[in-house]
Image (cartoon, rainbow, N blue to C red):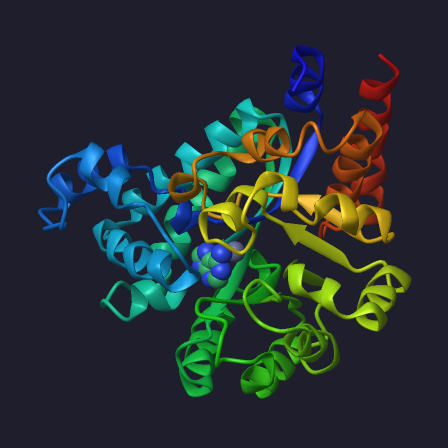
Length: 335
Ligand code: ADE
Ligand code: ZN
């Protein structure tokens, strides 16, 4: 990419809408926390960890990702994890971030839900204070577990309801269709939560339809395979459904073979409200600006400006907050 386009996207005001906070655990912090908490990890060095990050599909990554999360034990660990991400995101001119967390990954190991929440909330307050970075939390249910387990997690979230904006669905997609979680999403809706779901990352267009029709999502995470179905694609465009697309993740997990094959330019051409996000940046080789940079050569300034605009439009901020961000974005574009 030309230096000026790199500089342009690097300083573009943007929101990040698809990042798993457990996926921001850098190997250095993994080692530091393993030492602090005297946890054994199956790696001898930071280099060995990075070498292990070769994946041919989503499940290869998830196995390592859940293993790495075991070093997170105490409130300060969750705080340090989130703060490291917020510092990094602010450096990439992220103005607002809506972060996923996977409570079941922690509660299944005996870590209380409250410990996780207190750590994240402390970092979220500091991010706003020190960087002016606003943040929201999205609680994801692990779809490889059953719906009863998701219900247990939803009940645990009740005391923290006003600090969590929505619920999501992540983990192993194939064989775990959105319809498996129809009842818990309905209950979350009753409680006032917004809804998002991973769909069409590895799963077929039918899973995307279920996310729309059964879970009634406000946003679709990934959504790549929706493009295989012309009617579905037209519907997503008509409904101005936000897609949280993750280019480097798609490459690392072999959802897409090369940068030249990445469907994001096609998504924009089809009128889809696509955004660019990092997913699990510590595992996939880059934070949000690296993900923007990955598609340079295939997109121009106007495309990137539209993507940044989409990121605010697709957020769970109020209309007034979105307008304020878009004003800042427009001022940047005029410069
Ligand atoms: N959990 C963390 N990253 C994920 C991804 N890309 N897909 C599904 N579940 C995830
Ligand atoms: Zn994801």
